[in-house]
Length: 484
Image 1 (cartoon, rainbow, N blue to C red):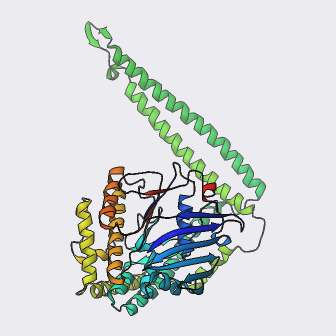
Image 2: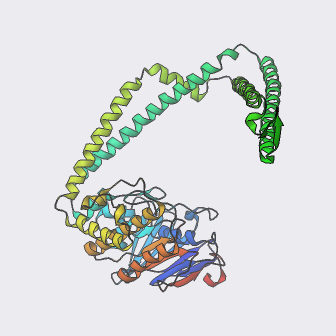
Image 3: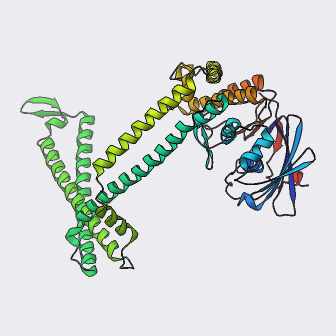
């Protein structure tokens, strides 16, 4: 599959056309020229629910035409808001998004497996923000998600629908009970805070303001004393150090000796007394600050312009009257999490048993990990590693490279199973985590093993590894050279 061009109408008058080639780099010397926006335009035109970039406004206010080729068929896709029209083989198909997104993508990708279609974007697109940390599950962009279990099940024709449904129900229940637990915990914090300020409940606003003023004056006095003592201690230490540095030879009772800090009468004792006084002043200062905080909280409460119960107060009352037992909530949460762990184990076992596709994924990942010299970071040297969720401790570079080779394994299996060469779209291949050398090593794999795939990147870095045609955005998306 290849993107030939994208046309965008910004104001129903001026149209701009962007041509794409076998290898296209969307380039500008500086950021904020529209590279990411153009990539997202492309995906939005393909029917995905893509969030707009800053400064461009809603994508659904613009009009798009994208031309793609797939399996010797040409598709001209027109999108305006949630309405899509596809022209192909002298036929016209219409779709309403997002309800008919699967039907649209089944037509243009030539894949009728809904599970695969739901997870397809993560296979061929790496987002500049989330893409380099999305290994095998999570959000790709916006609210579009990827799940490795669903993807493997779909591509391997393994039915785990019941287990996946049960897991989704458990995830929902766990989320609800965590909300309840957090609400109880927050309510307890409110109660603790209220207890701290009870001593000022009977004060009116004038008395509170007077108390605030008195405590602020006292705080200033104590702070002044504290700073003075700190300065004396510092000066004394500096004087003693200076005396020692001079190396003065002193004669006393017929005995000569070099004058040092320990021979200064009562120096250390006086310093210790000063430090005790300093510590006491710091304690007094903290006590006054604590009182001031309580007074300010009470003043803020009395400054509220309405006297009716707030939503928070009602929530507190509801929690208190519900009689919910935190211990019981914790117990239920543990049971739900244990059950989910059991479901995860069953899913992993079903997907791993005699599964050639899973083995092929694993072989591709290991092959490229060896080439990028990151094999030591593969936590499980079995095909089950493809389903891993152990990402802790991985550095930014290693995680980015692992995400990359996972994607390459997905692309290979899609090609093998559905006979389609997906485009490879990478927004900012050289992230902050990747050096030029690391990026070049990754691009070398694309050049060697994926040369028949269309490669589209967006970057401020040019490189000579792949012979990219440059789509120059130095003058922005609305440059005259794109106007038609």
